[in-house]
Length: 130
Image 1 (cartoon, one colour):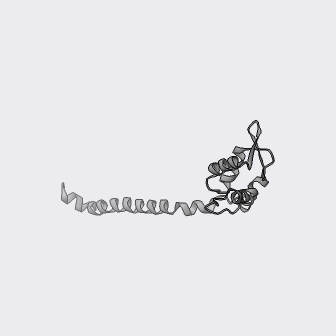
Image 2: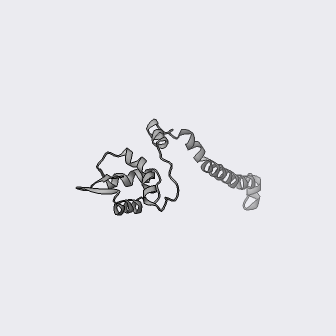
Image 3: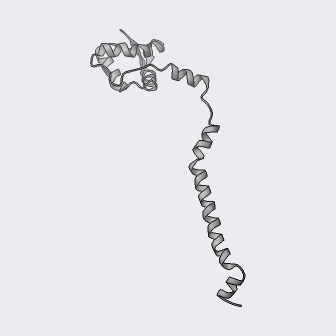
């Protein structure tokens, strides 16, 4: 027996249909698992420790747009300056301003220097004179 008769006699048609069905169902299950993987990872994701929570709680609320008056802006920045030891480096002020989502810290610090609020102390250190 050869050809189509042999295929029909030995369940060849059933095997020809079953193979692709198994492959397609396996790929479908794999796609579903991958699409829901982020939910499984979220279960095992590490919760923030107390230091991270306190840093988030210590964030200072700041308006999205700072006032045009440099003295009013200095009042908003005063909470950041209170966290720094006098004299301080500008990069420390930039870092703490970025952590608290202050808008345009580099431009604002430049305005403080021009206004005489932020005065150079020497050797890269600055003092807040308010």
